[in-house]
Amino acid sequence: MATYDVIIIGAGPGGYVAAIRCAQLGLKTAVVEGRETLGGTCLNVGCIPSKAMLHATHSLHDAQHNFAKMGLKGKSPSVDWKQMLSYKDEVIEGNTKGIEFLFKKNKIEWMKGWGSIPAAGQVKVGDEVHEAKNIIIASGSEVAQLPGVTLDEKVVVSSTGALELAKIPKRMVVIGAGVIGLELGSVYARLGTDVTVVEFLDKVTPGMDGEVQKTVQRMLKKQGLKFVMGAAVQNVEATKTKAKVTYKLRKNDSEAVIDADVVLLATGRKPFTDGLGLADLGVEMTERGQIKTDGNWRTNIAGIYAIGDAIEGPMLAHKAEDEGMAAASVIAGKVGHVNYNVIPGVIYTTPEVASVGETEESLKEQGVAYKVGKFSFMGNGRAKAVFAGEGFVKILADKTTDRILGVHIIGPAAGELIHEACVAMEFGASAEDLAMTCHAHPTFSEAVREAALACGDGAIHA
Ligand code: FAD
Ligand code: NAI
Image 1 (cartoon, rainbow, N blue to C red):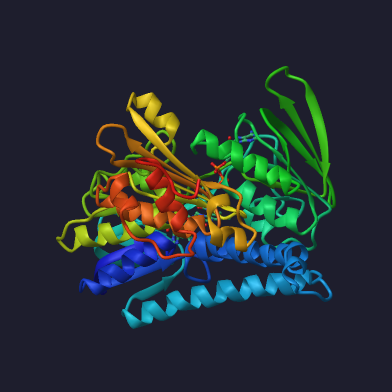
Image 2: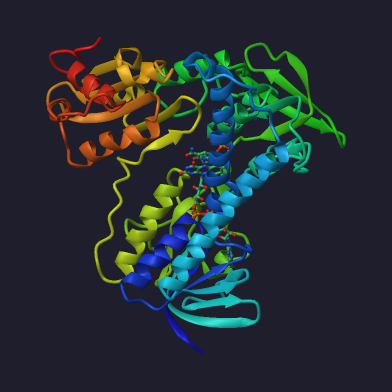
């Protein structure tokens, strides 16, 4: 029986990145994956397919609304739904095959099947038990269920079903105005579906900066999404082709019903640790079902590590990847680094929404004195040229030291622009450092610089 330096359970962004880094650091590495393909939630049913659908429907929107303005005339495109889904599937396949290639290149063994940990130092796959000096659990997450709502993945769907509907629905109710609800809701709104988002809280995208929340909701409303806020969904009654969603408004307890052809449940995800045998092993868990780890991604059982959606922190692919690299470094006797204060969050709607660090609300709560530098994309020449003048960059900097504490962007390529802020924050930069950095013209990035200038002597194009 071969002894491995590391066996990783789960081949999502956490697990596959950990495996590559382990192999690069000279460790004999295997990965157990229960799915048919590598890449986990993210590549198979999450980040990648949803972004393909966002891209396709954004292109449709552009053709329908902006082409004629630029003098591009002709028949406006119609939707071939089957082809759009095949395009999405091809994107998935290209990406999952890419990970297979990287596994071969790095001599990582792929053990196909569901793994469990019968004892520290052992991983069981099928009938075989493999010895491992170290085990990394990267088993990810699954959809959190809502009482009164039964998923059939056809009429009442999770994000997975929403990415492969048999046809474009006429009416969709989305439960939850979080990241999945807004991204997939906007996909279907662009395809002509009448989308109503029902949200428990009074604001969309919980945890984001308050001004951003309001602006995002306003922009999506303009794109045709309807919102029912402060509403607790009571139940969903479904037939084979239709559903009725009953909700109760929190402010006055009044009940109402919305009819839909498809209901998307998007009220969060929870760690997936079923079948691993963690209770028998005595692995400590949090109250929310996450695996407890220390600052080095170690569980309370020697030689067992955990990363990604299965542990605490934001459920994001890049967070899982960073933890994968860091845990591999720790196992190889090096230092692992993840700066949890600088993990960007991006919502891939149009326009994109991106944020990193503190919000105005979190700074007020901590009693930190801060200043705000804000710049509208209306003052950015490049954005105006591509019909993307909506939105802004907002920089929050320490009032005394000028250090950048948080950055929030709504606008074109916000998901790319945010990394300028991440690098600056990682280096402890001040708003002035950013403002004094020459930015090429004409770029969207100039809006970031202008917001930094607005923290000091003032933006130029405001
Ligand atoms: P996962 O990707 O969930 O991978 C875990 C893997 O472990 C799975 O393949 C599972 O089959 C396997 N596994 C579990 N238990 C076992 C076992 N016992 N034996 C063998 N295999 C096992 N995040 C972003 O950062 N950006 C995005 O744009 C984004 N979009 C998303 C869109 C959707 C619709 C969804 C659902 C999620 C999205 N996410 C996004 C979140 C992102 O997918 C997760 O944060 C990320 O996949 C977590 O990585 P992970 O490696 O921890 O787990
Ligand atoms: P979420 O946590 O982002 O949002 C869930 C929303 O549902 C919240 O607004 C919550 O208040 C609401 N809600 C909860 N119970 C409700 C009820 N009974 N009735 C009405 N509303 C209710 O979760 P979501 O969107 O399901 O996403 C899951 C995870 O996937 C997130 O943690 C996110 O990090 C990740 N993800 C990331 C993406 C990205 O980075 N672009 C894209 C998609 C998912």
